[in-house]
Image (cartoon, rainbow, N blue to C red; front, side):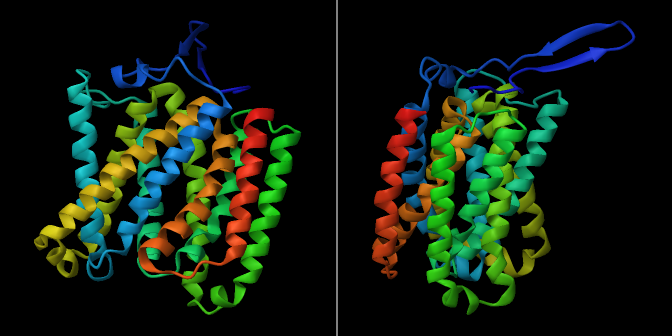
Length: 328
């Protein structure tokens, strides 16, 4: 990660005046396959793969079960995700992170996953009810919180090209919001602000992933955050257990949420590689491509109206992504 100030953490023990370096943990065998590559073009490719996977995964939040028993559906998804990451970890012949002993960084990563769990809960329930283009209004918040954390916390660079792309993305998204403001204002007051809360959560979550995965490795970070997501959703489900329990009795829910879990884990893995190869600022910019990919996916799957101004945004963003990737 270019220019990062947090690649290594230092701790000085005052009594003995010794300094210790907490270097990144040993990577899993699966992770070592990707260590020989890096750079903006690889990062852009990884994030594009992530967005395509999430586009399909996100359409599954429109399943009928998400309207009647959303917390049960989310619990099924999270339980399958935790089972998958634990099984894949054991299959690689390495110990599960946190098995036996816990470090402060591991505990912090679980808490980060719990924070992300609230984002997932709000995001999934919103997509089950609202037009997709409104749910992704919060992308601007994500973009600028992520860029700010990358610049001020991680010490990443925002050169002229990135600065120009950030400004153009902000302008484009403000224009799109202004065009759709009547639809947005017609929403219930609480629902109006949920997309921006989601954007804030993702804008804090993914840059924080960039911090902890430099210490724990990409795979361990995914495992620990899935622990946290599971705990958040378990707590939410426990509060509504009586009204949500019937969601566990439908076999189709397991198939739908199993597919969602697999696609999401693959998408998260590619996003993590994007951060590792290109940094948090680049990831925050590239992930805004999700507005177009997801709106297109929902239009194709559910017949949502698509506005051609979004396609103009698609073309412009694609050109900016190429410029930023190769001029970075």
